[in-house]
Image 1 (cartoon, helix red, strand yellow):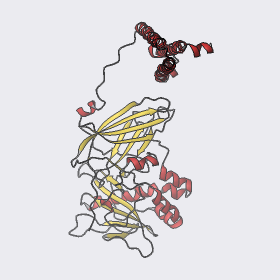
Image 2 (cartoon, helix red, strand yellow; image 1 turned 30 degrees about the vertical axis):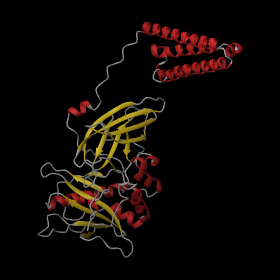
Image 3 (tube, helix red, strand yellow; image 1 turned 60 degrees about the horizontal axis):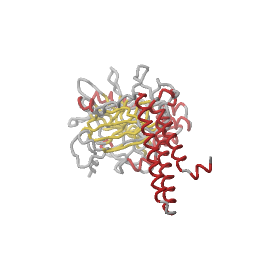
Image 4 (cartoon, helix red, strand yellow; image 1 turned 90 degrees about the vertical axis):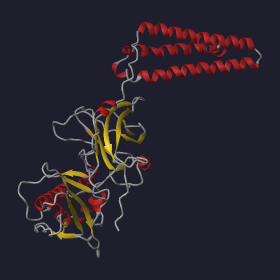
Length: 449
């Protein structure tokens, strides 16, 4: 048999033809395979068919060249004709099998996933995202109007007993690490914004940041230093906003708070106290369990776990947030559970021209429980070696923000966020979701004189 295979190339061609025909069977009758194999085997069947054709072609070329070198031209033509007849016969057998298989016609190309979205108005990037890197945090106020600065017992305890842990938390936290010694920190990207919504008078915002003063350092101008329990400073006659506050934690750290919203002092006082309470609750686990494990959990959060209540939907979603005073800077989250190992591909396109503006690839968290939804932070979940390639240099490396390249655009425009998933076990990419958002181009913050 081995000698025949070497001497008679037709044996190789016949073997390749039979292999190609056998590889066609799972394509024509996919139900002949176990259910677990149906999505995988057809992908590799095409590779086997291609390999069979290439091997047969290589054998033909080698045999023909050998005969031509020995001046057996007619023998070479005979080999070529026989090879063509074998593959023609193979194609006929395949056509006959396909006829009996009665393979349904391929479906008509569906409309772009973005088409339904384009019929509805574009969404505004005001989604509330969760996790330790979220820069937008909602706050609520009580019915009673406060008359004194709220207490921050956990912050005070950390500053007094574990200042190194508080310093480490601020330095490593993706939301606090950009603390600035600048009274206009709230005009620059990368700081926490706490939103107080009121249907009657509109939203208000408390911009917050930590400030660390070294020996001999000075507080930024126009801040009033306060301590918990002190009365709120009264706004002057000519002021429309309450003063910006620097909450002294009795150490080297201050919590800077700047209210921007309605000039109503009582509402501002309630919001400032709510912001102090919210920040204090963030560090409560560290104050109660001051160790490296708690610090890591506060900085990194749960491994992708997403929980917004028992009634949360299990449908995949894309959330987009443009924090106040961060014009053109965005945070995003993918909420999904693919159920298997793979990679998410998020492509952001201009809705009008379909021009790709940004492509992001990140590994997917997954769970065998279909009711568990997992969180994927963008840009936090992007691997470090890809962040430098994907993200713009206009945003600091550690900032939990990204910008959408917009070319020469100056005005807001609609952008399609197309999410796909590529399983590790398969080569095909499946579409997950498309959403339409109205985004704005990024512009560099103006430098203060």
